[in-house]
Image 1 (tube, one colour):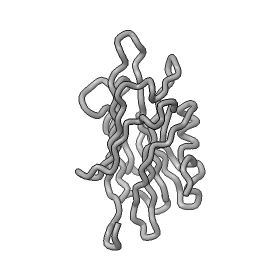
Image 2 (tube, helix red, strand yellow; image 1 turned 120 degrees about the vertical axis):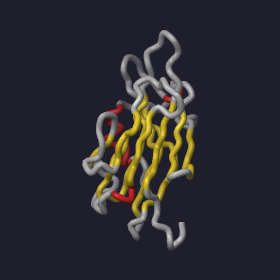
Image 3 (cartoon, rainbow, N blue to C red; image 1 turned 180 degrees about the vertical axis):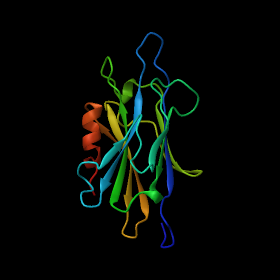
Image 4 (tube, rainbow, N blue to C red; image 1 turned 30 degrees about the horizontal axis):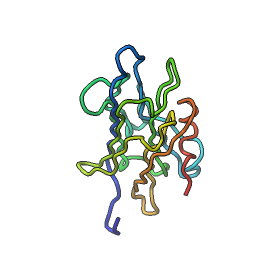
Length: 177
């Protein structure tokens, strides 16, 4: 990033996976995003966006939500309008959680998972979760506001083992500088 950059603006996080084999329970992956305040950027999230919710100011929202991976292309899509996010927020952490309905599921049990993060037509990252096969959830992106107020992207998939509710409470503490 050079001195003239305004940083990231509107970012799309897209998640895909194939449906479970016939006779097996549906696999349900969810995109989640936690927003962290300037005064506690690694503490508890100020709010969490997930299925059937959006940020209070409308800057983070789900465009598409799937409960089974059926469909063409990406099954879940989340938009983050970082350029509109209030200055009181320093970080946004995005994660993927596997719903644990009838049996414990990990990324190793999910058929053909994939993730794409982009701004406009520029791909920022693409992942397949191969690095975290035993995880039940993972952080997949961290967006951090720099000293000028511009948003920067920090890539990386970091696995978590536990239930989705606990993951949303601690996902912002998984990566420290």
